[in-house]
Length: 581
Image 1 (cartoon, rainbow, N blue to C red):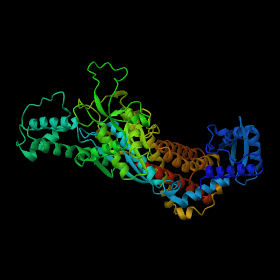
Image 2 (cartoon, rainbow, N blue to C red; image 1 turned 90 degrees about the vertical axis):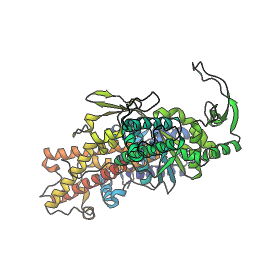
Image 3 (spheres, rainbow, N blue to C red; image 1 turned 60 degrees about the horizontal axis):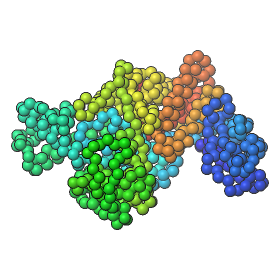
């Protein structure tokens, strides 16, 4: 039961009636008509812009059109009042009995309440994290991991078939540097003084790799200039790093369905295959790029290269796919990887990029459009930077120096639930400040604690009710007389619960799971406020032993709140928590 959409349907029927009466023409565009809660609740419970959207098209004054619509709508048994506001908005008050019916619906639907099958089984590939396996996942990767995993969970819950995918960048110069770094740590484990050069990763995390190499190979890899030994170091080091990445993701609650290796694209000839396909389409040519505008690179030399015609698809410059020495550019394997995704025939392809990859967005969209013959649109979501604070002091990170804050550091100090919830309290494309001190506080200033505490309080109330011999089974509670829910505070919470279906729909359709975190915090605030009211006014307690009708109705209300909280937390990958110390 989605009261917002029910009202919208009634409004659309009123519009249709005016069309039949020739008050409105029948070819009006109606896509931007909305029904939502007004920002100022004194204006009403729900508001619509229908008159503003249609009036100009129909050459009618918005307030006059609003008047026509109100004459029809005010006869509806759902609508207590409808008033014209401002230039032509219509504000509504809904009869309380319609809000109350929502509680029965929530109890009947349980955790499926609010979820519609908008995906209808369509397939979605979401690639996220995809960090180079040259070191542990850090806080920047963490944001992308949480956003991608939560988006995948959300889309799955609304009917999409979702694949979570990690692209392993296990080829190129960074892997060569990793292997040199591992070899230096191997020598160190054998007693040689450690002295990393500028082209190595000096982080202590590679000490374990060096020791493991000694345990497995002894000193047989010393003077490893030969390819077989270098390959052993590479294989072992990558295995250790990828296993650590998988372990950290698992402890964050992220389980990938696929891991796709960049080196396998070269090994299986997929890079050449993708470029050959673009060549057949006439999209690869020999050309010379102009010197980048604003560049002060004195070594710049104009040279002929193999270029992809990305300007045909909205890019500002064609992109090279081969270096001057004949090796592939970084762009080439990315082309092959996305060609592989297209051939796997996903209905939607979504990439989650860090903010430092924002310049890559246009060219990747261009190549997907080209590879799919215009049939696919690559959806790219950017995750902005995370700024860490502890004791009011900013914390810095540097992968090269080995002093950065890792995902494991976050997990050990804060815990999965706080990390996931707090990282979703900002939209993905906005910078995020993460305060270690706030993250472990057990106060209302810590959103995840506040939401989990709401669920724990509800569990405690239900436990107390059962100790008094009250049947708290949802099937029984749903049959109670809900008209005893009549106070403004109770109706306010029910109205908040009514927003849940639309929150789910908008979050999924706009790929914005942060909306769920915000909503749960606001719902928890309303619940805690109602619970506190009972401490002041005995008649507002949830359990009133000498008034069982009111008690049962309020138990129905708090169970509805609990259903939505648990449902939302599961999407976010956060444990609901039944009891808090």
